Image (tube, rainbow, N blue to C red):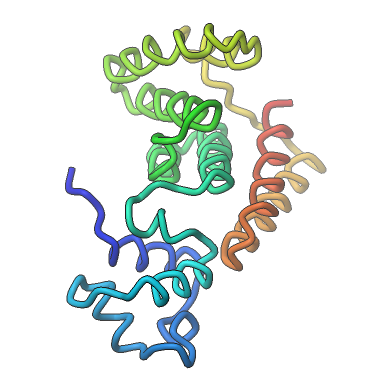
Length: 203
């Protein structure tokens, strides 16, 4: 799989946030220049890169190296868990981009989500390999809840939640508010809403 470029990361985040070239560029640089950056034909200065990162609700490190800042790593894992609970493994795996390189505990959460997604897609061998490696980390941290999650994944017991009525409305509301917060770059608020949706789905 080809490594994502700086321009591709900028374009992807801009699309996720629903922002036009003009809304990111404003008066600081031209839309044409930002388009050239996204296409890999121009390189922004450090100052311009920080401006772009701020307007996209992320950090320059992520744009440069693909490493999500801490809060965004947690958000990626929570979104992925919600998508898995809805039975959407491909979308769940896509949501994890950049989160797997995180340290404990966000990295473990992302890798457990990845294992769950791979298993749902029938890629059992890859899922088991990931789970074997992750078990050692979870045991070393003596995390009982994550160990339970690990066991359910190892046994191939993804929890699908088919809730109805008011619960379904509450989950849908949290997901919509989470999406809206992501578009405005408010990662902390998005994380709270996705976490709430996931807890309701697991209830």
